[in-house]
Length: 140
Image 1 (cartoon, rainbow, N blue to C red):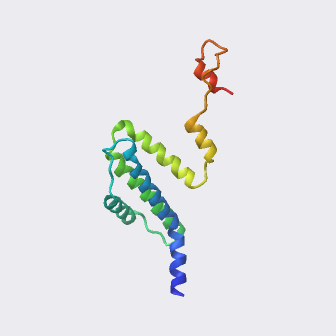
Image 2 (image 1 turned 30 degrees about the horizontal axis):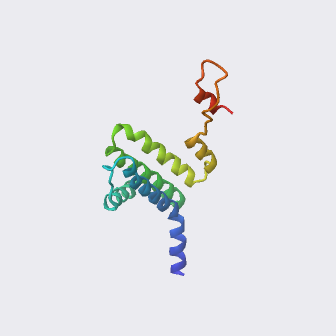
Image 3 (image 1 turned 120 degrees about the vertical axis):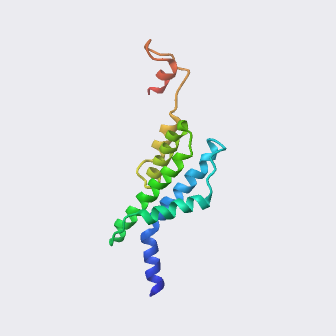
């Protein structure tokens, strides 16, 4: 009986844990942008724990999980942004936003891939003088 209750409670808090995991791997990948961006699991855990302490308490578990998720996301964003060059902050923010949307199935993988890759036919000749061949090739 206790094991069942623990398992049920764990499942209720899973969305907050999934968000924290996603955020850790996002900041871990920042070293691909610049090798100086190294974030340890210990530092992440510290930010995570402080966010959990600061999150407003609510009797309703679903509201509590939502509050925790938002607090963790905001705290990790602030912590990480402090260590980034200005030119990389928008990249980090965009990557974070897109990964959250993808994890919640709010955007389609194919649409996201199109946004990132935007296929262009560079061999096309522009039919109008104000568009470059590259821009004209993007119009389909």
